[in-house]
Image 1 (cartoon, rainbow, N blue to C red):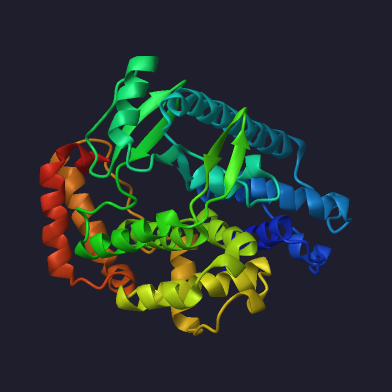
Image 2 (cartoon, rainbow, N blue to C red):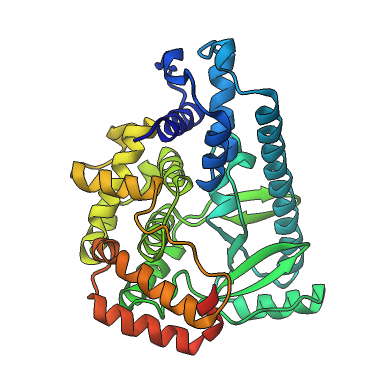
Length: 368
């Protein structure tokens, strides 16, 4: 692992952990802070690494000669400020959605982004790209009401959610938790998720209203499958690993681990779950006593981590040209077949046919 990645991981641990800083200033000697700032942005952790850097400086672990130069610090600080402003705007949009939907007794469950941010020391420093919501079976009613109230266009070109924009913020309104057209096993996992919707959900105050967080068991399985799907299809970044670790820090004791591992073994995701738990313990100081006993596979964990830090398939996606995009996606799918075997129980051929048919049904998704 090169120095840039080593320092990024260490600053990430420092930002998200209360444990003492053990590293000496020698670790940071001669490092390229501009490169680390760029890499952090690629990994979705700009503000988190910034927090780690500031803690190192405050605790005197970084000598004056190794401080970032003024231009780098200014650009980095401005990037963090932009993230904070975008987060505030997303919170404002959620308040607006709630104010409209609650009048028709439609509850909102927040998936991923904003909900996960509340597990972080500084919620606004968890990068959020869009807002994902689930309306307890009233997705169509919600779309119709928002279209009428806000005059927005509802894009129905995706399989398991609609897409619309409010004040420039993208919102995905989920009909299903998972894309049921991508893999046959997703239907089985969706059934497990739906069973858990009746469990206790935390109510989170937002403005004068409330939104609901997914129950811990639902959230755990959903996050795992979501990360696994992105990992197999393309890649995941360090922010996904942070999400899992921070989620565990706040929810591990509420998870039915026997049930979760049983589902994961049935669906061939148990090795991926083991790896995520291993990273949570090794890199984010999550107390292993909060977790069940799990297998450590050093070679596999290292390969997964290496792919997160620098994907094995790194060919850039074509900007345009349908045939070029299709050929690119095929090459990526073939290069990532080892990931497919790691997180799916379906065979490669079956998955290829299923996904090809999925794109035929929703051709707009081919370019996404």
